[in-house]
Image 1 (cartoon, helix red, strand yellow):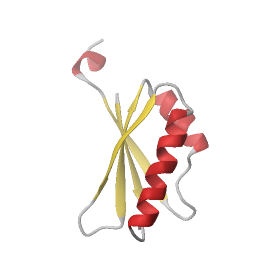
Image 2: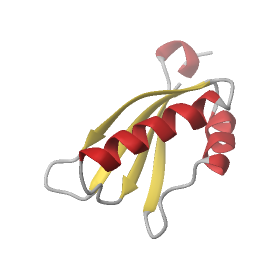
Image 3: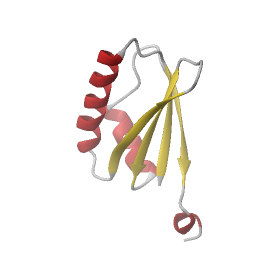
Image 4: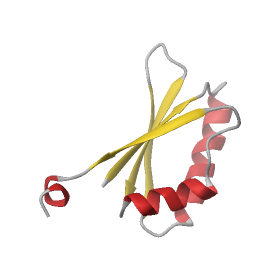
Length: 88
C-alpha cells in the first residue's frame, strides 16, 4: 500500500530539505516494511507530502512513532491500496 503523509510545514531551503530526506531514509530503514519513495510540495502552500510504501497501516504508524512531524506542524495521512489489496 501507498501512504501519503501530508505535513503542513514550511521547509526553509535546500539544506533543510536534504537533511529531512536523509533523516527519512534513516528512520524508514528502521521499520521493516516501510520505504520512503519521494517528497512533493503543494503549489503555493506550506505543505509537503511524503510518498511511502508500507506493508500495512500498522507499519506506517510504527514508523510515525519514531519519526513524528516537526514541532508545531500539523500532519495527516491517506492510505491508497492497489486493486489486489482492495479486492483481497
